[in-house]
Length: 119
Length: 197
Image 1 (cartoon, rainbow over the protein chains, first blue to last red):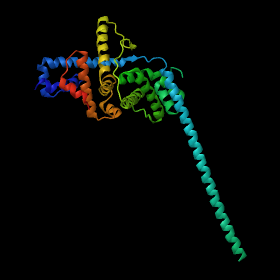
Image 2 (image 1 turned 90 degrees about the vertical axis):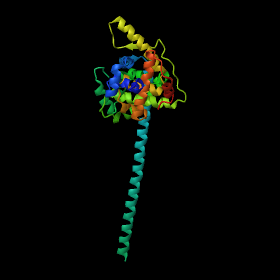
Image 3 (image 1 turned 30 degrees about the horizontal axis):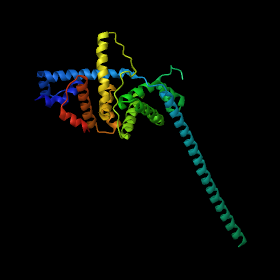
Image 4 (image 1 turned 180 degrees about the horizontal axis):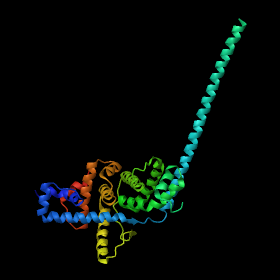
């Protein structure tokens, strides 16, 4: 096994990955690959340490975010209101239609009764 | 909102529609979110846009946050997704180096001056190396190696396969190692990177 054969495995090995037997045997006897693993370990440690650092944003970001949220909240409220009105409108139409149908049925049954009584 | 209210309580209140609680969540997390956005995009202007998009998206979907993961992890995933969307919309990516005077606050104080100097030198080279990576490689290495995000989550938020995420991670690490430790890269491999998945 040559260095090129294991090159892709070295960063994983530095990250706690397990090398297969052949790759492990090569790395154990190859100073170049061992040095690479050490460099990857240092690199991963440095990357991990970045997690504890924060980058301070320029002033104004917080107020921009909150303003955006307020606007989104208002849009949401307007949409909810319109949705509520739409439901009320549709409900009104449905109630009117139901009342109309009931009235028609009542009228029809009264007319039939009148005709029967007259006959 | 009193500072004694813990994050979980705020999240629960925000899920119930308490806008004040959501605003407090923003106050407590926006610097972290901006930091991740900056690391993913590589510049301040994009990072600000991504941070704003992140909170708008979080606001709209907070009622669907089930609490399976930590709130911060959920927010990181949204940030990663917003950064990916933001960068893919741009026709031309910028690769500005992080300025030397970028305000970095270390929360991890070390009392060994020599170690601090070495760490500062490595950190400085690492910041420059990260900034010079193409965004698609930088996103994967930042999410995996800085924020410990699993490959599966990275792939999902960046809209790529898990194997593509692993390939990008390997290439990003190799390029960072070459730059941080002054190792000369293989020309053929560099050519591969130019067409990375």
